[in-house]
Image (cartoon, rainbow over all chains, first blue to last red; front, side):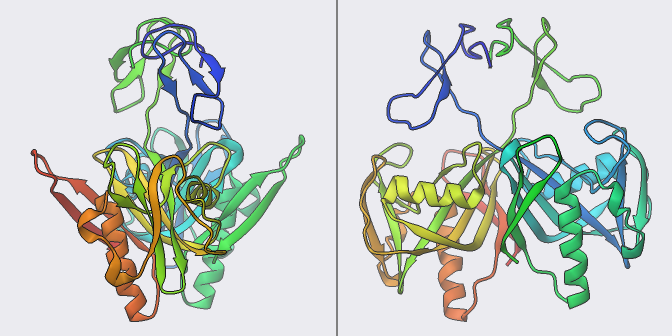
Length: 191
Length: 191
């Protein structure tokens, strides 16, 4: 952010009165521009013993597999956003069942919400952001070709819960460790 | 939003290529300015059979009671934000136990997360945004002086769960109905 979205003047970085954090502040019109985490909402679409994954047609992680998910939009609920993303990326219609995982990704200021969802039929196919879409049994999941750690972690927990016979909400953090390698720390607070 | 925060030029409202929603778009530098819901995170601070409420010193709803909660900040987790807000508004130190409720408030583009939390001691007091802070048993809760429907709804569910002997995640929507009166529709998807 370089300019004030309210008046167009150049912004400054400083701690506003009564605050404890640096913000972008407009010295001309005094607007404080807060920046806050975004919600990514999506589904684990279920059909019998299989789940639906999408192979990404866009960056980041083009060519790798993921659950249908994306940024929650204004005016919708988390579960509406999850179903919308499942339609947009996988052309699948679902009934959302329940929240399955909430993961904080503080290094990129995102909170990931993934819902269990029942596919209404087996009509599906790639939306504009997917190369292909397919149903996978647990032993068919392309573990080494998953796009994001949050998806791999959620699916591992999901199949463990399925074997245990009950799904329970998972809540935790996934933090990227410093350095060039893609190493992450997982912390599960609620399982 | 009137001006592009990247280059300072006046923005336009239009649907970008490949999108389905109107966004603020800069005709000069082509930046698309997405606007997405914010997370409000907070605690139900517990001490024996009582919970901690704050009387608001700021608008909106100044003078009314609420749970300690506020906007999640970049770089923190939802549960860290909940504990931070509990410190800032009620000067209480807590250990967060588990997520208790997630409510979508689509009319104001907010998602409310309220966590059960254990107070570490009975040292507490008003932070700068509170007039007073106090512990309440269920029969002492000022139901007619609560600031927000999401707080009233969560507390009703919370005490019902306490009587039933088990806390279970609540997930639903609170939508403000059209008109001048403060009427809301509650929909519970997960209880």
